[in-house]
Image (tube, rainbow, N blue to C red; front, side, top):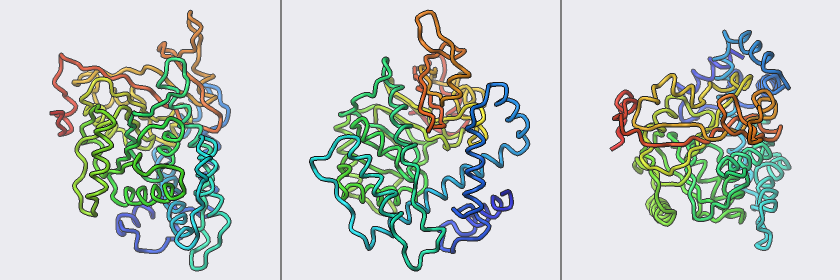
Length: 392
């Protein structure tokens, strides 16, 4: 797979707008890539003990960075191809519309599966190469992941009702996580991504979902911007909705990048680079803004670089900046939960640092942290100065 990784990097560098056809030795879906990626993910998600997990990571440490890149880039290519195929299918196929009376979570999720898998999987389109006729089969993963991450926001680990609240999700791409956050909680959603193409694909997908009557399009907005340079503030949902409407009305291919996001909850995708997460955390300028950080644990650190709060603090000196960050609650995958859990005197499952923990379904491999943010009055934001960002 290493030659494929190198070829993919060269291909993207030389053809950033993807005008060239699929290259045989790239990381787009094909038999070899699918088989290798499936083997890697399966290996990382076996039921290991803590000692076994440490031994595996040690034995693979020399190639860990390559495995992380292959995993991240292959996943991104898979999502891009699946989304492009959805667009191709519904160019000539009527979009199925959800009956207005079927509006609960299960109804909407089932209908979303029709859009992302059932209908595309039933089609064979002439002129589209076989490897690009890829129907995305992993919606259940996103469903469970969003459901359990939302449980981090409540003391009793129930799923919150977030009607009247806004979630900002950093990482647009194929916005299934954002869709499931909205379906589960009723929150309005803001997507932000540095890549213009990702933003345009997200907009087009949301338009299809709105036409299918799964969402109200006014509940979603998409903005292009560098997450490491955006100022994150808390503001009322009414103000956010007005801004989103203005953004859509004035949308153009050359619109300015967003410099501020106003929301109640900020969520980082697992694949977001560690330096971007660190800078984004340091750019939070409002108390009361809740943060969920998707990351990995144990052998899943072979799929993504570690971006847990402790790793960010160690690498980027966050503890000396203008914000004080603390992990308030953690969601672990099944095997990591078992390896890390003890029960405190109050009968609450906690990790070694005494942080409350919840377990997610086996289908989900991600770890997620709820991060508390407080103002450090003794410091002037050393990280922002270091990275050239401003909190003013």
